[in-house]
Length: 258
Image 1: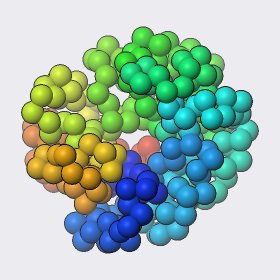
Image 2: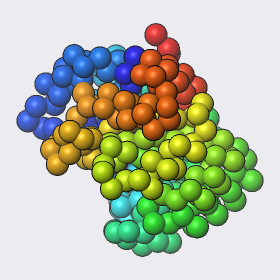
Image 3: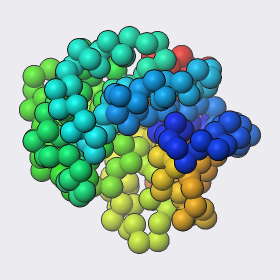
């Protein structure tokens, strides 16, 4: 089964042809998709896409949007996560590249997500960019307060943060960036990821893999990411599919495995 662990199908880029995009994904063999919440205030739109049997969703606020609700509480997230179609907490984290929200607010809101993941037992979907030291410190400090499961989504940060996260039992998702010609550093980190905790994603409509780079990304393209992962790790296509499928269901265990 092909699984796209991170889609943004409620994004406005899909407003004109959302149903057709979903049908193309199914036609390409994509059996499951997880629609990722970008901010709690947009949860209703995110959740609406997950009415289909093969689409699930998360609840959370991206670090870019943290300033929208700096007082977001774990209880707010836990209440929304009671919806049976919600299978994860996030996308949340730190992004010091754009700094679209103040860094202290990003950290505060991120910690609220960690607490919600700990309370619900749902996996935490983590976004991190140019914040390796701070991310590592928060994850380790929060894990010491009580364990939680985490996914380092679309991982393109350094090897040291990957090592620190792996020691906490983190899963990692590989995106179309792995196919980019200049992404040798990303591929080097992928080679060292724990083999039993790697999954794949498109992060559509962003980061379309080669040969679609520069176009709007779609879940139908996730097979290209999987093929590149197989090449990087020296796995056969069937082995890559089996490994990532097993890893996905081990992480997103609210989703019944077909």
